[in-house]
Amino acid sequence: MRIRKLAYVAVFTGLGLALAPLSFPVGPTRAFPGQHFVNGLAGVLVGPWALVVAFLISALRNMLGLGTLFAFPGSLPGAFVVWLAGAVLRRFGKAHYAPLFEPLGTLGLGFPMAAYVVAPLLGVGERFAAGFIPLLAGWAASTFSGSVAAFAVASALRRLGRL
Image 1 (cartoon, helix red, strand yellow):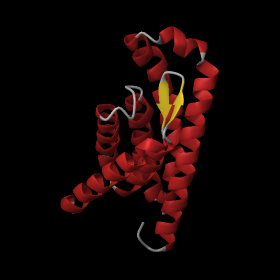
Image 2 (cartoon, rainbow, N blue to C red; image 1 turned 120 degrees about the vertical axis):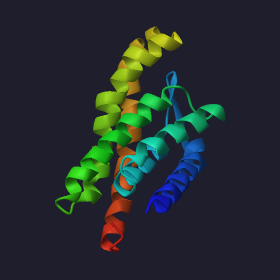
Image 3 (tube, helix red, strand yellow; image 1 turned 120 degrees about the horizontal axis):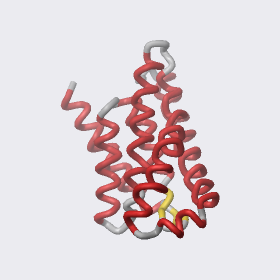
């Protein structure tokens, strides 16, 4: 069982890295719908290991110059919330809805972390504060599109009997 989860971690990390060029700049950050898509699927399929996937993708994107340090607060809380939602919804046979909770983590937990912790540490607090609404809108567009795509795939997996 653990080997299969590690294989999923590797596949999801590779998928996130392959999708990384599809990010777009939003102020001092880079919005990446692929991260939210991967978070949604990983949270449902590998549970807490989704946090490892989110961390690895964020770290690799930063090492390759495809992301910023905002990738960490932009991805880890979303993966965490999907994992928790998946654990609860699995009891009711509705785990495929868990990816739809990803925006709660990204916008409700991650965005404030980015605004009040990461931005000041990087010295872009003023730029972040000045563009607060556009930044929030960019992050929202990213997380909602990725989450809906993950929900569609999770729903297909459920119909196929794989979830």
